[in-house]
Image (cartoon, rainbow, N blue to C red; front, side, top):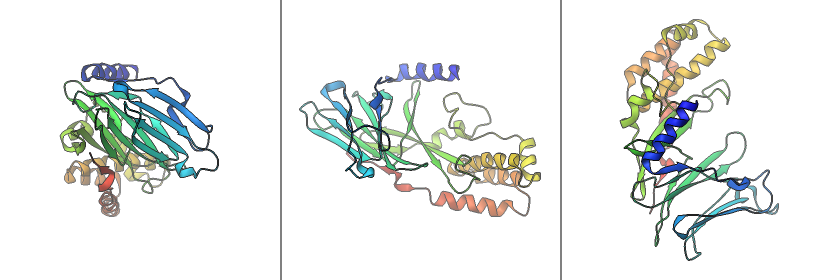
Length: 283
């Protein structure tokens, strides 16, 4: 884990971004716990500033947390309300345009699952560039290749519990005021058989034949259920990457002959409901 962190920080140094410990309790506002009033204000490069505010008990929960960015002249250039608000620790020139960027996340749904959206705000004056996202990305700096944004999609209802839920990821790049899907370019790193240090937390699980055989033969055991969640994640990621043949092979290996086709169809159907509007670019 320490080695992975050092690799990420080294990559960040070569891409002009850094991970900041904002060092204030108000880096996050939560509707259920934050005190009323201004949680924190912080100066940003170029004369910009960010302010996070927790509303009082008379404020609707879905609008209790406010985050806003002001320009050098004090005008509000971006604002978001939600159940929660958080300033992402990664900051710097995320899109390579020579201007500082920050990421602010807004929680749109409370409860255990939550539902986050975010904004990448380019601190350019006049006219800061804002890219609105329907998800809260994990940022990965890549040496010599800039920064990518990771979108993790959880497929609740396909696993045995919320804690055991299959996922798939999409990889995006941001630039020129918009976001583009770059997943296919990174698929070898997401579904490869060898661990990729940069994508270690996001790559699809690698399952050996012995584990898949246990899942296929062990019926409803806890071990089989756990392996099948990993198998579903790998199938979903392979489908996102366009490799239907490999995805079918995993399904055949993880479920009995009488079940795998139905299970596979269920996963394909779930991918068909993957939100295409999670990306909402605007200038």
